[in-house]
Amino acid sequence: MQALAERFARYAAHRMSGARDVRVDGLSRIHGGASRETYRLRLRWSEAGEPHERGLILRRDPPSSLIETDREHEFRAYRAFRGTDVPVPEPIWLEEDASWLERPFFVMERVDGCESSLRGLTEAPCVAHREKLGRTKWQVLAAIARADPSRLGLAKGRSELSPESCWEHELSHWEHVIDADELEPEPIARAAIRWLRRNPPPPAERISVVHGDYRSGNFLYDADGNLRAVLDWEMWHLGDPLEDLAWSLNPLWSWPEAKLAGRLLPREQAVAVWEQASGLHAPSEALHWWDVFTQVKSLAIWISSGREYADRRSQDPMLALVGWVVKGAQDRLALDALRSPS
Amino acid sequence: MKPEVPATLQALAGVLLAEIAPRLVDDYTQKTSGVAAGLLLVAAEEWDRAAERRVQENRALRRLFAEAAPQVRSEGLRRRIELASRSRDPSLRLSSLDERNALLRGLLIELHAHVESLTGPAATRLEAQIWDELRAGVERRAIGFWPL
Image (cartoon, rainbow over the protein chains, first blue to last red):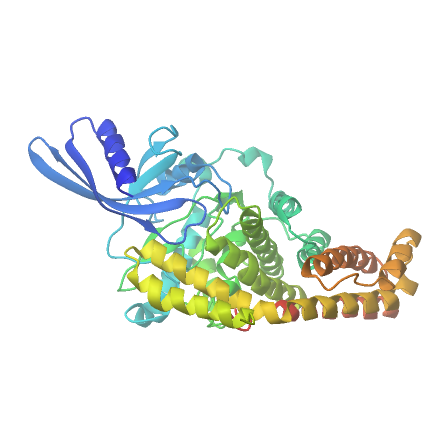
């Protein structure tokens, strides 16, 4: 860890031309974030004779990843949403040159005094503010859905997507992931994929930025129930905003409080907050399609993590856990979604 | 020593959680140890039932195929379904049972897709049986220790 701290200090000094005596304190790895290695640190330096310090988050490409995306893609989302109604940490440096820290990485502001854990939502002090946080959670998701991709500079690829067919683009993507990574035949995932193709959803009301992993656990909140920053933008893309809404409602994120979506609000209330704040609609038939899609996408991610572990591309036991236990739970949820009426 | 594998794995998980993790200085390795201990407990649960659940599932799939075969319209698929329904597990080694299970579950996918294209009460009943088997497969694999 000391070697990484020293290398990062050298990098920071290279980026900050007026800085002297640049050093790193308290570098530690954050658990989770299986798509990238995530570290917290405090950077200290002097400039014009004055001491300075700043809390930072370092996101470094891993040797192996749960989700294969490039860091520039994620960094671009932070840059685009900075200063909008969607709170995000300030993105600071993007570095593609692997010689600095062995792998490419990016750096962003550390938002202090917050946590992101699912468990924290059900414990004091946050448990008293769950309704407030829940309302904000789905209002912020509505703000993502409302945002104009062109104005944000995130419209690349927009012309290739139509409201009628954007679902097909996403479904094919995740089907290919399952094709490539399954360790054994997956009859539930395959049944879900066939159902989705036989019952296409209505056209998207609009083509929006889709966060791609908007859920409890992927935003920072404080002790007063304020949502301070939306994180983990590595899977953002353009598409039907109902994709994000359904993903946020995945019952997996509710466990063990099945009646509270993301451990925060009853599903119906969450949908109503989102509809009111976005001005968009979530008809039950369309949302049901995206609920089933959510199961396929989740299964694809857990199947991929199992593949990473089985192929020994990663020794992270979290990949084995999700590929085994969570994938099993998701199979059950997929069956529930397929057998429930829209 | 007679190797009691589940008890050994449980004990190892206990050592990790109670003895090693608290002495680790950083949050990341502490939590990673916790996940590793959880996996040992899952493996302990799986150990005892591993062969039984595979044998049960392979038998259940063969029974399903035997009932389904007369309704399959595609000759090639019907032949493979009939053949699979009469197959046997050549060994109780997990790797061998898994190999057979993969063949049978692959065939189940084909059968399910085929049945979805059929109409009539018999097809509806068969499809319901397939859904029941999918549900049973999930329950066979469920981890009691980690009841997500």
